[in-house]
Image (tube, rainbow, N blue to C red; front, side, top):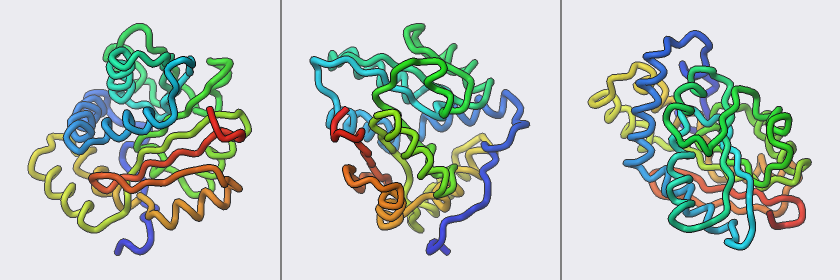
Length: 232
């Protein structure tokens, strides 16, 4: 059942989700990320690539309701890194929610990530949290190539395809979620995830040699694909 990743599209990838249903989904995803350490993984990964004496522009792609950026912003103020933060997402409702949900110092754009340089002239870090499992392997290779061409370091925080993770999140969401989107998409997201050897193959097919992959708590992968010269 888990040898091959699922190609079934998530409900969240649809274009006709009622706003109230989408917002309930975003609220519950925030809770899940808090409880299962998704935000902590991102912050620990950023510590590996940031230097305090440098300024960076970070864009969270597929930013949803902006909760990841809210966590990064709080952490950034405590740690005193020099991070300028933005988010980009295709859904107008997500961007509206994110703008209400975040400090005015974080910019949000409703657009495809491939158009990010139309909004921000220079980007140092692309952050993709629970984004890549929505993509095909070819689309992931295109994302990697986009970042390398524009000398951006790519940070990926995503799910491992695993039977225990699938059944655990399926039971938990059936018991506690009020969102039909979460109940359907949370376990499906696990089935759409990748295994470690698959990530290695995909990244190597993108002709990348300077990268790291680490298996992390709660069946996640931390992936850093460095800019061409090996540093941000």
